[in-house]
Length: 247
Image (cartoon, rainbow, N blue to C red; front, side, top):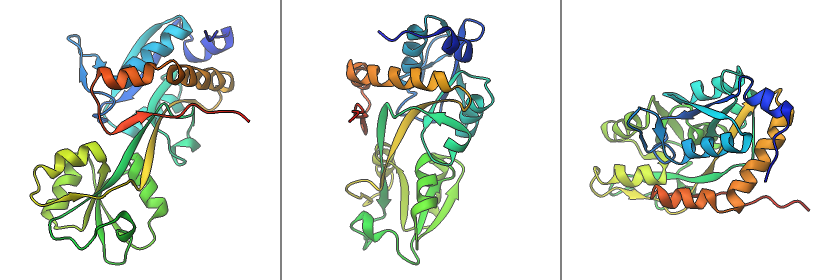
């Protein structure tokens, strides 16, 4: 059992309540809402588990944008925020190791000559992508030749891909499976261009809390809770992150 120090409680739950934020747009980790309107799913249940380990009540906040989630932790409005870990975001908040990983790949249209992920990053290739999503931030850093064409939501990127006859659609594999059902002949490329790591973020100055939260993540993975939540909500396209080993 992980013990939370008085310092950690003061940092994360200064009034005896842990405020935690989750991104409502992540359909893999927030899969619904309760009768009272509170978000439900893997990420909300992780927040509840952290609150239990802290020994405090939970105030769960659902955010419509990922920027809002990150900002809630950066400003200390929330003790913790659950969102995709990324170097750009890590300038604003401090992340634990991942608790789950999501596969990101491409969908290509019928009759596309592209058959592998390696063939996507070529001059003239245009990729529809949800602006500032975790996978889009990765593509912005790593693409050398292809061009990103941005939309302001996952649904909008799907529509943009079809409307503009773009060469590829970037996204989480599970979402692309759904999108492909509405685009006859489209194909999802095998493999992944990156694995999106979903982690817990907190204010940069919460040094003691990062150690506590990182230990919590390792315990939630090693005890099987993360895998059990994936099975409970019947979510495909993600897996529990590996437990970190120290040499």
